[in-house]
Amino acid sequence: MNRKGEKIGWIGGWLGGFIWLILLSAVWIVQGKISNGMMGIILFIFAVSLIFMLAPWKHPNTKYWKLMLPIYSLFFISVALAIYLYDELKNVGLTWMSLLWIIPCLIPFVTAGNRKWNIDG
Image (cartoon, rainbow, N blue to C red; front, side, top):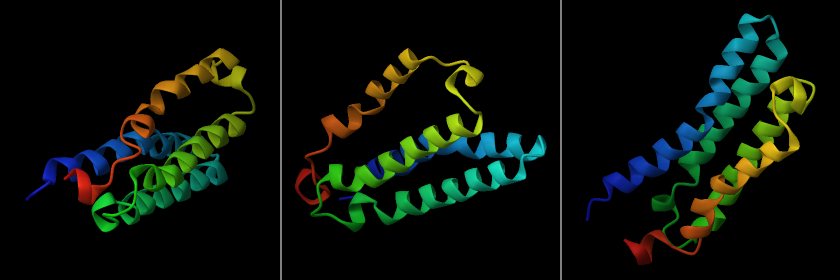
């Protein structure tokens, strides 16, 4: 059975979650913050590598939560790094309450976490 849609969803969804990082890195480079931009680019490349290395069709007997955990971790590290490089939450225009937006990001982790590619396909 061809599961092309699920593969596109895995790759496209995760890439969509990290696209802001490459755009922010480009902005930093244009602003002359080369080291910030290069850190962002390196994180983005690492994220893309993880997305493809941890694809569920490459690990069909592994639960999704185990495959998503490293990518989620890198995502939250990227967010924390971006906030740190801007010096503080207030400089980015965020408050501590803004961190509640993390909750919707975790929905796929909860809803699909116990599935496996082999069993659920």
